[in-house]
Length: 136
Picture 1 (cartoon, rainbow, N blue to C red):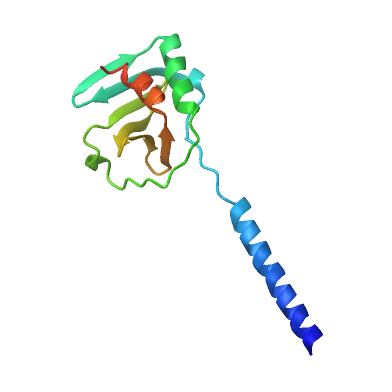
Picture 2 (picture 1 turned 30 degrees about the horizontal axis):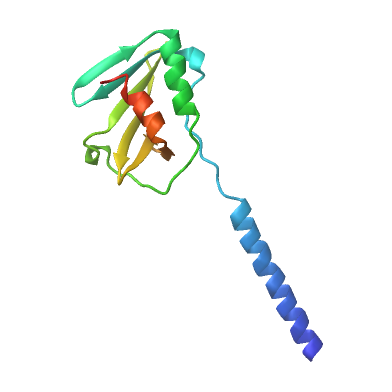
């Protein structure tokens, strides 16, 4: 009887261990949905009614590299973009007049990049400042 109990406990323990391992290693990896940089013809950056457009290849590549270098998905959740009063909107404009919108903002001394329906990504203060210089 004791051998049977030990086997059952061992099997249950292995099953629990497998479930935990699967959940830890099977986390969904999020990425920003961005086009190839070569398809971007301009970038519009706006804050509180002030808008600027960047169309030089050098500046487009610089902004794109900052945005693309993220990957630090956060649990920060924004359900309504209108609650972010100081968010900077970044529009990546393509050849066919379609645009991808991103938002950068601060909250509780942290810096975030938001892509609606995808997620929030924590960025560094330096990355935030580099993006802000285009609109200020």
